[in-house]
Amino acid sequence: MKRPVVDISDCTRCAGCYDMYPELFELNDVGYVATVERDCYPEDEVDDAIKHCPQDCIIWEDV
Ligand code: SF4
Image (cartoon, rainbow, N blue to C red):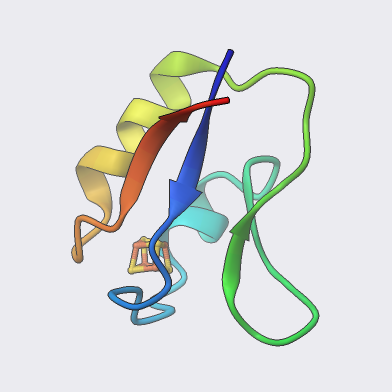
């Protein structure tokens, strides 16, 4: 399985990913963008979020 991961060192919290896909990305309790815990992640939506992230800080990670 693979899941999207946000590199918070480059993320500017522009809100693009969690506005577009709130079922996939969220602001966590300490104010950083994180991936929502799910059993699986839809490839097309994640690829779209990756494409639109202005910081290129969303990547797929094998888990
Ligand atoms: S789109 Fe990219 S830069 Fe913007 S909040 Fe999401 S991960 Fe951060």
